[in-house]
Image (cartoon, rainbow, N blue to C red; front, side, top):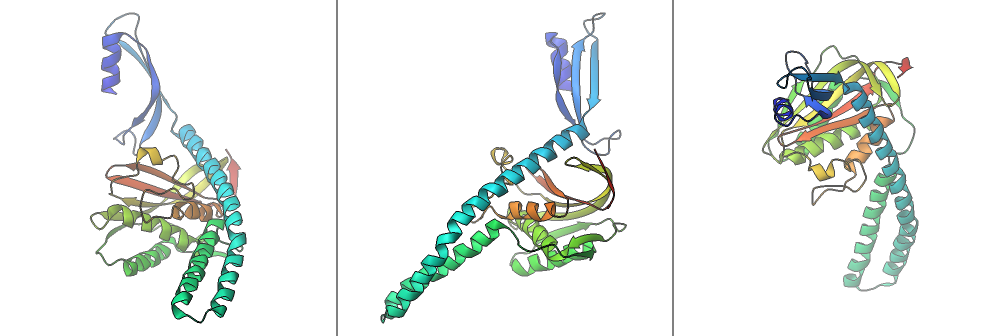
Length: 296
């Protein structure tokens, strides 16, 4: 902000742009403001500064963009997956028939490879098509669910992990499909583990937010669950694409974890947002707590 004011004083030009204001004594959280600065007519050294809080408008716009991105990516990948899945059964069946005609064990090794790879591709396609079946919702303690996810992650990882908790003890149980939510949070925490690569910390945080808008719907109260890591951050050129399937910044990544998590969260009327910069990446899962809501 000081740089903006100094520039207007030095040049006499008008300034108009959106700015991010860091948390302070005035604002507990980061705010986005429409900032307009112009020289005052009465005094060349005086400035007229107009600040309009557009945080909510900016958030709604970003959420709508995420929802559109998610829908477009899902439709694209489902079409691709169907095209891939149809011939896989034929390839596997042909390999099995060929295997029965072979007497040479060395040659059978090749058909075994074909069968195992078609099975792997079929499993990948099922992942691309998304979890099937209706949701089976029941009251779930989110903190117990997160602790279950942590136990799975710790069992998977050979390296020592630093995982911190910052839970809101007053957060009530939420109507969720537990299996779907376990998978969604597993995907998010696994991403955080890969980001820190054994050298950083992961923080799981929960809280209730009031009067929050998701898409076009305003909810009286939502649960926000954050997964934060202190890794290198998501490259800027990838941030607009990370919820598209097959987009990944890791050589061993599939690019399916985030789209699948977003799909599962959206089934509960929620959304995943993120903020990333070097040293701090936060994925925030927003899930409505209220059954009655008002249109924004």
